[in-house]
Image 1 (cartoon, chains in turn orange, yellow):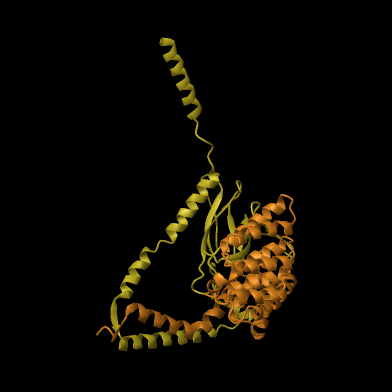
Image 2 (tube, each protein chain N blue to C red; image 1 turned 60 degrees about the horizontal axis):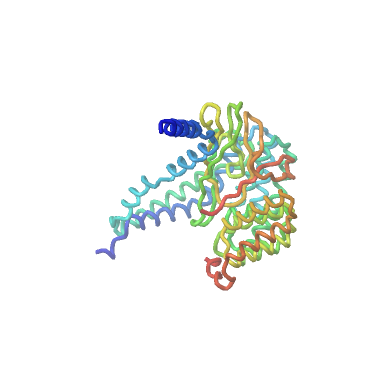
Length: 221
Length: 203
């Protein structure tokens, strides 16, 4: 009798999955539309719609509309002109497309956004690809965020990329990477060069971690 | 002997006097603790545990589950049909329903393992009437995450749910954007206005 019945939980999950899959297209499209209504300026609203339509037509995944929409609303909050908003959205769209390719096969919204931000500050494209290869089955949004901050604080991109990739290979946690970033910033504020500060704190964390071969499985989860 | 006792009493009284004033009140610490407590309370799983207990019970036959799946399929397609009729044209947008408040939790297709993290926020603005946090995680919407004043003249506080990663934010203080003086700043080349940086770890 037990085999013939399924739990309410299993039935609920199955129903939710079916509903989600069949309605997914609609859900992804409706949220930006609601937010567009909050834009009072006609010219800005037209620009936002135009840019979102272009992004959709260019084949960007539906999730990429989230950061694009946020960029538009940031411009609205900062009282930017419609021309500035168009320019910012266009540039972000290009970075998102690039990030989508580099973080393939299925980056999350947060990874796409973080990847685009990393490219914005000058992180090499190759690094994004290597980071995805180092952790193909888990989100690397935190790692990308730390790398972006390091480069934004004038750590040379190649040096910052190597350190983050080395730490990822050894299984450093997001908390360890964030702590390293905070420590680097403190040292830079105290007068140390960004490069020296990264070297100091990166090596410090490295010394606490096991060799790369021992953590391959963890990154692939 | 009497002198010794009097001296000792005097000494005890002096020690007691020096210890009796309380240390200065750290309003930020109190605000942070209260915000963290509120965040934890907000994430208490009690109502859900009742639902999950109900769902764990074997009650559906395969046939009834099939019916449920069919109903879900129908709901999904009806929803898709209804919502896809919304056209992304300026006139259609302008005439549709007014905007609703945007939640501080962003829509995301992130893996199930990655969840939004409650982050306590505090900000000093003694003379302000309204303070809100605006960020990429709430579409820079000043109605999405308002802060409340702690006490009559204390710091403004809120707890926002944020996905792990790097986020840019600012405070909207009485309609004016203000960066957080206690956080690192990021230069914004797009709009020429700096923002503050918030790093959120995976829980």
